[in-house]
Picture 1 (cartoon, helix red, strand yellow):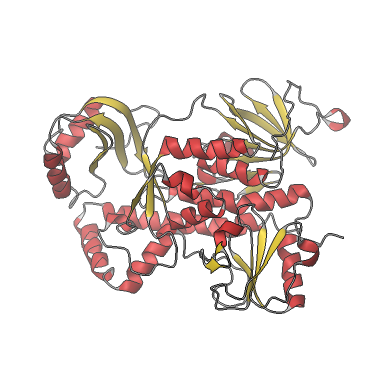
Picture 2 (spheres, helix red, strand yellow; picture 1 turned 135 degrees about the vertical axis):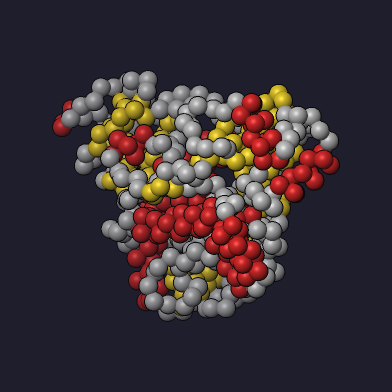
Length: 496
């Protein structure tokens, strides 16, 4: 796919007939994982995309983030997973809920039943490179400082004084989103009650001594860890004494003091590479769309990092939104398609916020919370309980409300075996897919946006399924007329 030639000369805001022309289809504020994935998804449909990122350089803080099963599936759908696995480390999918040490249940319904740990700067770089390779333009050191929307588009004011026009603007600019504040979207929830220090630094004691002490301390303080990250360098996380201004980074002495207070030793930490703090604030935007401006990722929801769901939730927002916004821009979207973004993703975020609230309670050192933690640990010995919590954390248990129908309707389809390979290899282009075991159905006038595989050998328990570009099952059946109605529902009117 050739990169589009964009013109971004300075212009002045205007109104009415003198308004500046639309230079882009979509401007994305923020080039973290959510923004980069969204840019790539839009470019699969030839949407003209500009990503504005306030930071001049990608973060160098090598914090390890985890990609859960559903995110791994989505990356496989776009042919990205092998590239990511080269830079990551696979870990068992157990022990995710409140760090309760239980193995993952057997037979999880995913071909990617593991956690992929990968340095955050690496995944940001790989996803940004993927978006650029597809033709997205990324401009760093250029934050969004203002916006004004009208019936035709959005005028975006950038920090460098330029005024840029696009048909839509998507805020992927983090928990302190400037765009969300400019829109006046409410962000209700709870402020931080606890705080945690996180950093990378060298240590002065042997690894065996560290491992033994960490295992001892974590029994009472699940938010505590020291994990090796390269030669002599450790990732350190320790509960803070209180809640501070997050704009003020902690000092090495803050780490030493808290390590001594909780572990009885500071492990001889020295030579810090990065020091930061995070809280447990939990907030959810009351709406994801205001006219031509949408919110995704941390701009729409924030929560504590327990369970490692934040990056995954944002990336999954992008996969849900990308094809819908592209359909709107390409002119074939059904009237209410873009509204299904909030209808589907807002409840998912609300559920994540609730489960992180519950996990944070289980991290408390109070006797009551510890008693509940011990009880839940007993309950997780039952396969059904353990499986439910793992599917919740990893998002493979999500079912969107598509109306009455079999349980599979609205769920994502795993990467099953199909003729000549695996299912997800057929979804790299971000199009819909009819998987037809009857060999007698057709996508007809929707062939410009929906692919068709007639395969009686496909590992399905139903005759046929219609998949959306995000891999969720939009229809199940074997009747052509019923299929046509659902093709219209999700993919608009057929081409002439």
